[in-house]
Amino acid sequence: MDIKVSVIKLVLAAIGMPKAQQADLCALTILSMANLKPKTPWKKAQAEWIRIHDVIAFSNANYGTTYAENSRETFRKQAMHHFRTAAIIEDNGMATNSPNYRYRLTDEFLAVVKDINPRNVAKSQALQEFCKKHQSLTALYASKKKMQKMPVQINGIALSLSAGKHNELQKAIVEEFAPRFAPHSQCLYLGDTTEKDLVKEVDKLSELGFAITLHDKMPDVVLYREDKNWLYFVEAVTSVGPMSPARIMEIQDMTKDVKAGKIFVTAFLDFDTYKRFSKELAWETEVWIADMPDHMIHLNGDKFLGPR
Image (cartoon, rainbow, N blue to C red):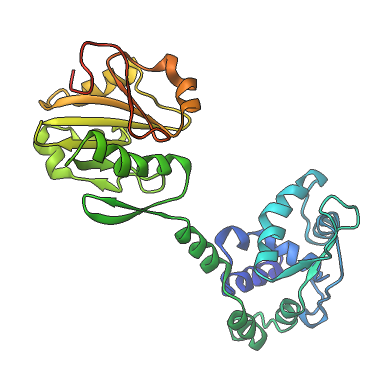
């Protein structure tokens, strides 16, 4: 690949673009928008309004690429969307499906490109000014991700769950289900969608007889009520994984050395989701629905909530 591509990738790294936006495709997008061919001096960079079609054609004609027209969506998602957020490019305000929709480099980033010194990219005055005025996209995305985390109190400790319906339900299990139906219980295990073992009380699990090496098969939430010596195995179901007969057998096998009483619970966010999975649920198990937190559904049997 041409040296200009490598240099632009260094520039993108220097202004804090995420790794995915430092790829060849992204560098070629910048070069195309600046109308910089392999031998064009950096100071002759331009900022004319162009289409993604023009980016593809320029890259193929000048840098030996073979991008097809149907790759326009890839350019839009991997480069244009992020570049616009990072103030590298701007659009002309037309509807995105309009044939007149165009992009161009911002004046600030055009100045960065014109000021490039291939021997020492980071020392560019224009680049340093750009970085002072604009938060890096990596930092911006990290900030948004952190803001989207959900605070949750587990065993008296303030923790955070990443955003999403599955973790929303797990939060409800700990904060709404447990106080009502597993009072004074301790959370022994909880897996966040991005951090598998967010809570994992290894010593207590081992004491109770768990084979910790099999943690990948653990239910979403495991609660222990010491006064009754009951374990609650709770599956948080938003799209897959209710307490089916096969799942019960799997957990029973995994906990064959555990002597505590075992309660199997499937938790749902709402009644509609419960109805979708109702035929898969095993008998002698419990159902809890976050929309109706004060009630439980017991699937048959002569006893209600309690170990079987």
